[in-house]
Image 1 (cartoon, rainbow, N blue to C red):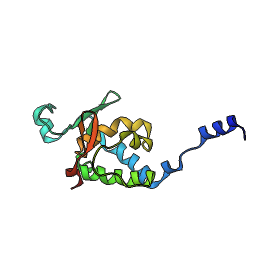
Image 2: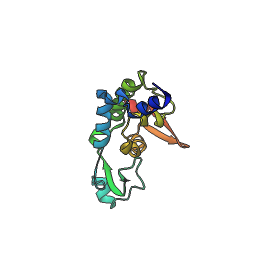
Image 3: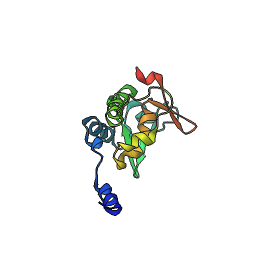
Image 4: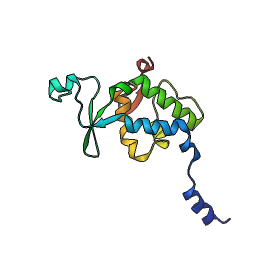
Length: 143
C-alpha cells in the first residue's frame, strides 16, 4: 500500500472507541441535558427571566434558540458520573478529579454538534468553575 492509499484509508476509518456504550450514552445524555425554550422554573417565572442574581445559569442560547437546563438530571454529580464513564471508556484512564478539565479531550468523544453544550453544562451544573478561561473541577460537585 502506498502513502496515498494509507492516507485515504485513514479518512474513512472511524475511531471504534466512539461506539463504546459509555461514550454513546454520554452523547445522548448531553443531547437531553437541555430542553426547548427558556427556563420556566419558579425563580425564572417570578423574575421574568432575569438571572442576574443566580449562581448558575438556567437559560442558554444554542444555534439562536433558547434552551433550558434540565435540573432533575444535570446536577454536578450526575454530569460527573456520565463524564467519568465516557472518559474512562474512551481514554482507558480515570478522569482526574481535580485541576483543569481538558475540554479538548472531552470534545474528542463528543459529537461535533454538541461541543457548544459542554462548557455551559459543566459550568451550570457546578462540575467546573471557569477560572481565567480554564475549567477547574470543583470538589463540591463530587457530592
